[in-house]
Length: 266
Image (cartoon, rainbow, N blue to C red; front, side, top):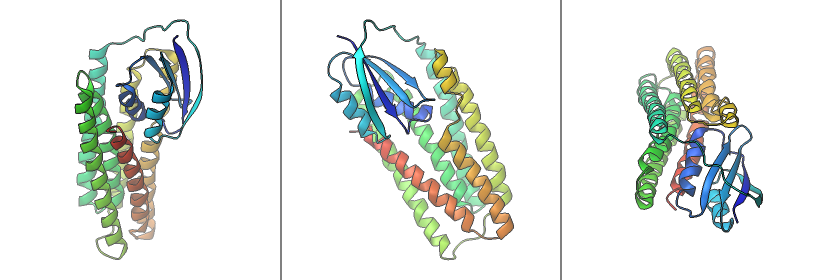
């Protein structure tokens, strides 16, 4: 008997997390369809067989999930799909995130801003997820898991090095960040996130998902705004402390994302 099982996933607030869930469930037999409602942080899984394996796989991602319940599903309407179209749109989003990773990393070091460096790693995190999604299409489960593991460890290592640099600068080493660069580059990154959101809307085939994708990627937007505010505070206080505080918070978010990516390899 086909079942429709619903999950509340509180930290699934953007398409990057959606892609992670899709990849995590891709190797489970019996799943016929996944319906994502990002606006309400919900996932409906149409499947045959037991729910335990599905629930366990979702829980391993550490996205603050709750199993709501299951009900009989008389039939499953196949989801509209256009794989080549979706791949093309995912490539656009991947390239946008990769571009801003390079831009923010470079300008972050030039302007001595740990906030920009940390934000660049957040962009890298999204780029890795979209890259994994594209790489996994048509590929083996083992290959997907190996790439996820390497990507997660790489991101984790960069974040730890970022933490070490924040500590070094906290004790007086390094220069005061250039606030103009912080504000301008963060504003451009915010525009990049908005462009990614518009592109990702086109991957949705029903009204609920289109409505859901109107919500900004909350973490990315908060980070962009946080770095801009830090730039303003650096200007008024002539202190590196606001930049270091924002950098520390963002590096912590990046570490959390890296651990989520590594869980795909389990």
